[in-house]
Amino acid sequence: MSFINLKEKVVQVKIVYYGPGRCGKTTNLEYINRTFRNQIVSEMVSLKTHGDRTLFFDFLPFNMGKIKGYDIKIQLYTVPGQVKYNATRKLVLRGVDGIVFVADAMAKQREKNIRSLNQLHENLLSYKESIFKIPLVMQYNKIDLKEHGIPILPTEVLQKDLNSRLQVPHFEASAVTGYNVAATLKKIIASTIISIQKKLF
Amino acid sequence: MNYGIVSQEQIEKIDSILTDKLIKLGVDCVIVIDMAGNIITAKDNSESKYDVYSFAALAAGNFATVDAMAKLVGEEEFSLLFHKGQESSIHFSKIDEELLLISMFGQEISLGFLRLNVVDAIEQIKRLWNKS
Image (cartoon, rainbow over all chains, first blue to last red; front, side, top):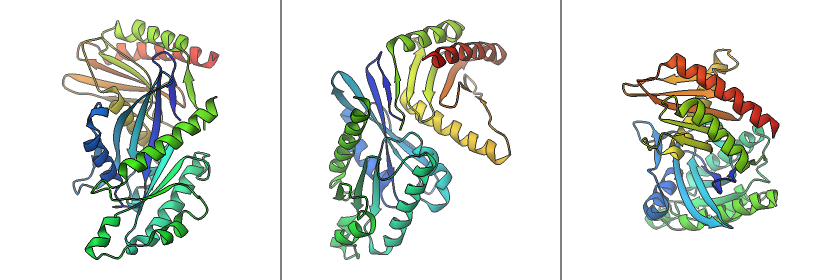
């Protein structure tokens, strides 16, 4: 649920990066944190295990400037990707306004992407949200691995696996190098703001 | 999806309840958040400066986790949480299904006295909220 404060003229928007374990959700946020330092007021919060895996979530507040006099505060979250943490994944999804689904383009991760997307669908249903209605962007991450000779799924295959029914915007990306990280973020912010505006006015 | 919109009038009334009941008592900082981690309003004694946005995200996560644990042991909810530190402590209290009130305070305030005032503040905020 986005939250609109008419006194201070602030709109808070919650965007969640979702996807299977080790697909690069935290790496997306880390890149954003490094690259847009001047729009970020505080430190990124990461709740992780000793092995550097996300335990609960990462949190990064991002100032987008003003629209029609309203300060837009984007709250970026990631979920823990490991299979066993679905209970916490669900908690993070509470009140979500927009989702980036980060898929791992490595060929061997094909099935995990599909499972994770199916679980996202179920988790949203538990909040009476629909994956077909919520603003969603697909990011096919790790395409840089192609140059290192690691088998990568062609985008057409990923599109067919994950996006044939959803038909949402998609990006090939590399969170490590930053390729299309900003483009993904821009797209999900735009879709989310448009969807909030439609519901309000 | 529900969108939470609060009018200027409502926020001002909540702010004055928080100031009267808690800040004047000596509480360092009071935040009202929703369960998604958004800030409804935050008041402080103008000496303490906390990063309230990160705080809200973590507090919502913390409360949700404890809530899930309550269900695992067969409780409907743990409606109150308290973390005690050397210098400062944090008190969480549920206002309703959507809202949480968080107070950060130092050693000079007793927990009992704080709780009485929190209950009072929550009653007043609830009345205000339900009217809208």
